[in-house]
Image 1 (cartoon, helix red, strand yellow):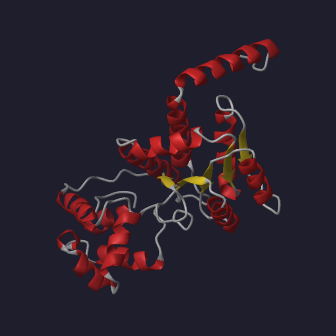
Image 2 (cartoon, helix red, strand yellow; image 1 turned 90 degrees about the horizontal axis):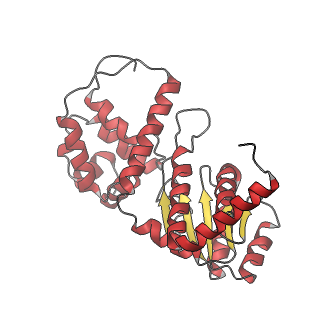
Amino acid sequence: MNAGTVSAADRVLDLFHDVRLTPTQRRIAHSLVQHASSAAALSAAEVAELAGVSQPSVTRFAVALGYTGYPALRRELRERASAVPAPVPASNEMQRAITAEAAHLGALRDQLADLTVVRRAADLLVASRPLPVLGLRAAAPLAGYFGYFAAKVFPDVRVLDADGTSLLDRLDQARAAGATALLTIALPRYPRETLDAVREARAAGLAVVLLTDSPVGPIAEPADVVLTAQVGTQLVFDLHTGPMALAMVLLQAMCDVSPGSVQHRLEEFEAAASRRHLFVT
């Protein structure tokens, strides 16, 4: 849509943009869009009946959208129903994709009002020596990005970004060297080898911190701590702006655990970089 005003159906539909839903959840979303004018007044049982699903499925659907439960989702539906129709500016698909990313970052900002889970993840990861960081396929660049900066302030950060028969060997080696936790980055589409590695890590006694796009993803269940940031899906390939920002937030939280030692290592790095003329500026 390039012009005009936002309809009731559009407002409801906007809740599901960039969210990967299961087939059951898509049925619920479709029912809400079909009944957009009355959606805010529907109970969870009524939504379940309209969609032909169970009431617990409606609750899981609300959680998948980032709400604490269906009552919180219904409050959002009520707010959207009472809002004054806003004009929709003309835009092309590239602009809409970037606008969606800005919205994802806004949601992440609000999510970070409570840092309890981030700090718990940071405590687990800081205590691990070495620190293995797992990221395969689409997640490999982000694992490398995180590992590059983490290695500046934490000793023995090991990026596991290559799949194949040696992956579990490298995980075993990290555990044998003293690792107590594994940071796993899993982004759609989720490689089966990532799930296998996480299960192997849990069986070996490692705590698993998962950075991913959805709390109900297939790799979330075996993880000890799950951190989520939405992935953009409006272009041919996914945009990972949110997960990248969350990765740096996590690293900041890790640095905050022991600021003195972190500052010392940073100063050592800067001195070495200057001595070796590593950078042109």
